[in-house]
Length: 182
Image 1 (cartoon, rainbow, N blue to C red):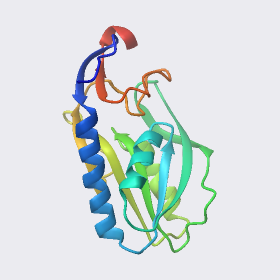
Image 2: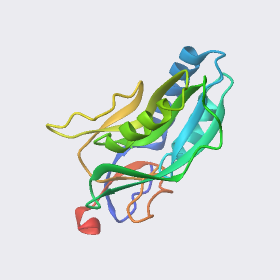
Image 3: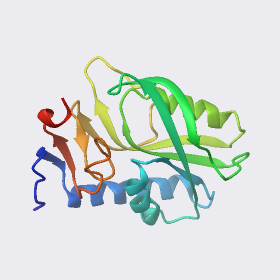
């Protein structure tokens, strides 16, 4: 049993559940990509923990790269207006690209990123989202090909996800207490 951080009100996904999700997603990606050698792209910073585990669960040739984006909004919600902070180092023309995302909420930033990458002539662009946040009345702008788990509309931290650059190193996915972020 994981020890609960004092700022976390409950655990949504424990270490064993996370390991099972990553293994399942790795098997799905391996099956679909076979020997295609996709470029697996992590969206920094939140997706780095997930990507490190996921790439070890994929049993086919892959390349990796990283992008960092900054989206402008009111702090809690993305506006979809995106600035590329760190672009790919790898040319993607004619290549299968798999974007690895930590959590999909509105999908506005990810939608922009997909359109940007498609403009570079890849063979395909797909998304592997570790978590999809279920927000009542909201349909994300992106439908990921691979989904780890659905989570409620709560402030989620751990396993790479943060609040103010804290809690990324928690080994589980937890719900942050509202008094911490309000």
